[in-house]
Length: 531
Image 1: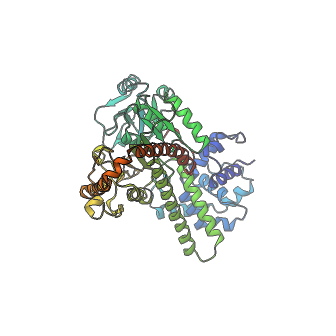
Image 2 (image 1 turned 60 degrees about the vertical axis):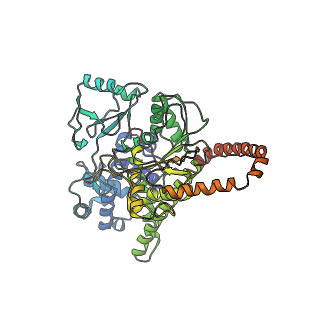
Image 3 (image 1 turned 135 degrees about the vertical axis):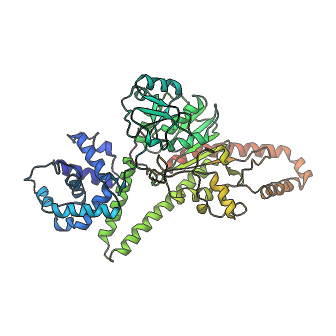
């Protein structure tokens, strides 16, 4: 089969979410030039936005009926962005059809870059490619941080005791410690460590800094029983195991069998030995999300491409003039965010039913309030005062970027003023992806919930209204003390009922482990083990 036609078939499959980039290219026996195919697919997805503008403005698909959209995007990529141009024989009719419009296409490419406000071909979905440092988590189950530093110094690298600002300013062959996470090292952008012996042996784990926040914030003490609710590919699971020092129990759940197999490989490589579920006290939840905070990741570029293909299909099958179709596509996007938010609330709500759960971290790689602050507000409305937000002092206190107060909605009896909203937002952690005003990492959001103490201490955080909270407890005690004679006469019956109730809760919690997993939508796409 012609190379470009085969690439177009793969792009169509990705648009329908019928496979992963690696699986359809590097893992495809029918693809002969696997590396070239993988590179072409990845680069076309990276530059999809600007190429789509060229395709639309040039009306190429209208002028050349033999072309499909996917094939046209691939050919435009090589024609406009590769010095060697379209790598096919000049006698191929499809190449001839495209080359007839070469001058017009190049002119539209220049106009598209001006329209999108970019000054080079380093585009990712219409924006300048964001440069980030290479973050490396040291697996403390295998080596200490100092041992790893010494190994790199012995290998000719220079260790900087004071990290440069920004960390993207690291010179080649230099590295430093991260200023917020004591198990993380920072290397210059595009440092390739995939073949380094410390990586292949599981000592180094290539993981984005923001991705390390949830487990660092949850921070279960040694011996804890932990669930990683949406766990694949397993980097957060191995980080939890590292923090526990291979003590306690970790159960990692994920709906997708392929992703679970990756998780097994990653945790085995990291030396994790935690046994199965028992009494769960800590739960890490990083459920499916829109991925809007992820930059330069192929799996999320695939999601963006698939979403765009759906919008193209809407435009091609409706005839009301353009504005209505765009409004319909925008409404579909909003509906997806609403659906994801509801799913995320359900995940955390089920986790909160575990009778011994003490702490739950909730995280997304999204920048949308619908998946972040709005989810937190909904959970507090449903579960306060039994569950509260953990205050900033225990949630990466030195991290500068917190939640957005204006996205914190009112909560009856808890949040009603701007001061209340600011206090809630201060408990939350946000990272804005790259760019001039962003952080040198992927976009992320983390909230941590804690169950109020059973000993009568409400464990009040700065966002609580103590008087209201104590009032609710006082009312409950007043009802309990209302008829002491009746209470003393039914002590045995109460103990029996309490035992049955406890057994019921344990059974319900056991079912919930499966429910969290069974309800999960697999929106995360292809796994990038390096990230």
